[in-house]
Amino acid sequence: MNHLQRYLVEEFLEDYQEGYLTRRQALRRIAGITGMAMAVQLLAACGQPGQPAAEPTSAPAPTEPPAEPAAMATEAPAATEAPAATEAPAATEAPAATEAPAASPTAASAAGQTGMSPNSVAEDDPEIVVERVEFPGADATLMGYLARPAAEGTYPNGPVCPENPGRTPPPRNS
Image 1 (cartoon, rainbow, N blue to C red):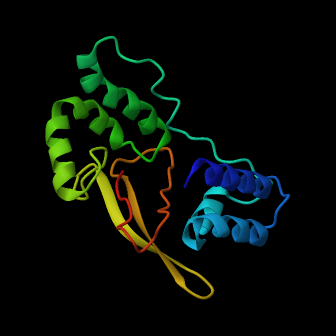
Image 2 (tube, rainbow, N blue to C red; image 1 turned 45 degrees about the horizontal axis):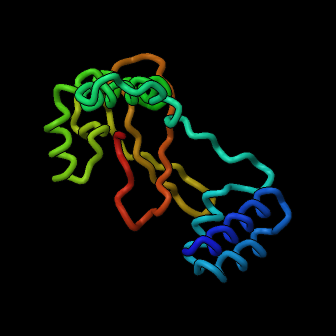
């Protein structure tokens, strides 16, 4: 997209979010510029009109840069993981966050080989329990994947909803 197309799409999205355009009108206008596939994704990302967009939960965490470049490579993952461990479903991520600096070279190479994020937890990790879950509905059964800490206790909740189901495997244990 060039600058003019991007500007128009942003204006149409803003009008849709503020309720000046219906979903159908916004879809028609954005699809005329970007194509239908992109228009559907953009509108889905905006949510319903009249509702404020969700604020990012992980972006505010890295506010203080480390003093040394070497410290950035070893301390930055721990700084970004600590808030995620308190906000995400991750009593199991807290130990991973403390172990990450020692295991980061192998985690990074494993991520390249398996396609998993270095922040993910292995499915056979003894600190988590994983299972497939099903929720019966009126017309269909919804299937999901549940990963939770093996230890008893109260932990924060953090659902993960993939945006493009069917095209790529859904994220698990991250």
